[in-house]
Length: 72
Image (tube, rainbow, N blue to C red):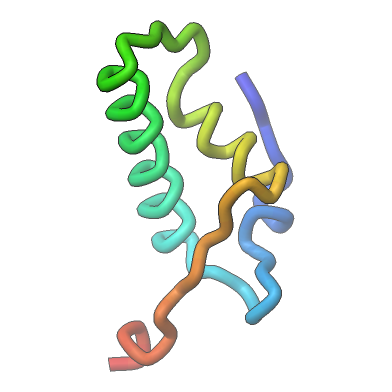
């Protein structure tokens, strides 16, 4: 199990993410990982959420939050 520093995950080049956006984006990416594995008949040994968080920390993908939608 990984325990990343939450402040590292919430910081972006455009400011700070909301925790909701972080959770939604990581869970969405985890579902994408599972879907890709199913399509290629691959077996995942690690938990998809852990893989998604690791990829986020490694900079393999980034989260872009739509601030105008949050302000409404």
